[in-house]
Image (cartoon, rainbow, N blue to C red; front, top):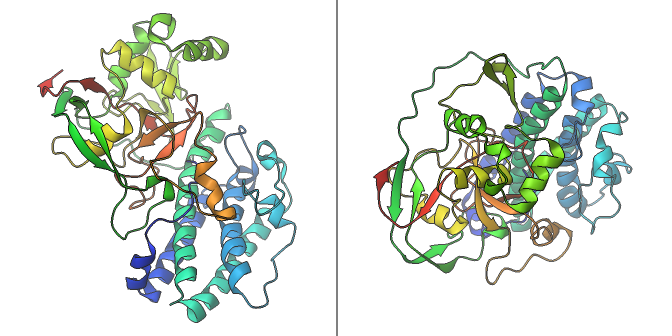
Length: 414
């Protein structure tokens, strides 16, 4: 997941949240990051499998850097950094903060060792507790603390997706964790849930936390449309693979076909054929491909080609958000990120915040597509119907799946 930091109209919510509640949420979030790293060795935590991914050690340090840089530095009377070099080493892309270590080279940072990063986390947490005691009722502090918590939750998802890619790149295909093969209920036929044409409201409202790219709330006119009642399954996507979907240029956008040819893409990234059987690499290692599970790790180009092959299309993000509260739709939140055909752009009236903390969203609103819904790797309670994730069309290492759409509002079974 990309960092999409800046708070929305959460200040009012902070005034109602107790100091104890905010402190406890901070502690739980920080502890969960360490829990995610617990199954890994120091070597696992230092490695980087591709430029788009980051080492676990870097995630643990960067989320701590955020609290140190944007809260401790501005709120401690006698601020001193834990280590001055960390300001550059663990800066992501905040140009307003200063220099940063190149993203593709994060895996070269064998020093500082993991133990120093863990000590860094511990010291910053202790200093944050002092601020909770002293500034717990301060609105600026509370807003930044809430922002930092949500920022760390984003990196918790990235820890899982980046570790999965790292372990898959190892020819031994080691597992991140042990997990039983759980039974999955048969998916059943795809239903189509229809929505009439009309003016709808899109974007975040209320006093709860949101990122700035979810605002302002505004009106959009939608033509009549239908959404698939569930996500596309592995079994359905396998028919696309076996039916020659990756060999038919008529199904692909021009850039998508060039990408398929240049990279010899023939199936989803974590699928492998073992004789006549298909397997899928998971966080629990290689497992037989379950035909009833949602197909995931699908790039936008693949998603779009599958939709065309299936006689459908991808939804717009406004269609998806409008439908999110409807009955009959399954797997909208928490199963897989769902590509939309909407380019990632500003809502009408959007204005980024001033200063470094406002850099995250506005400057990334180009050459990317919006995804909705959250995934199985998204921390519980982190996502919502208005949440806008975004990636380039070739991104495959995230838990991204396929939600189909059609023109017209007829409700029928496919």
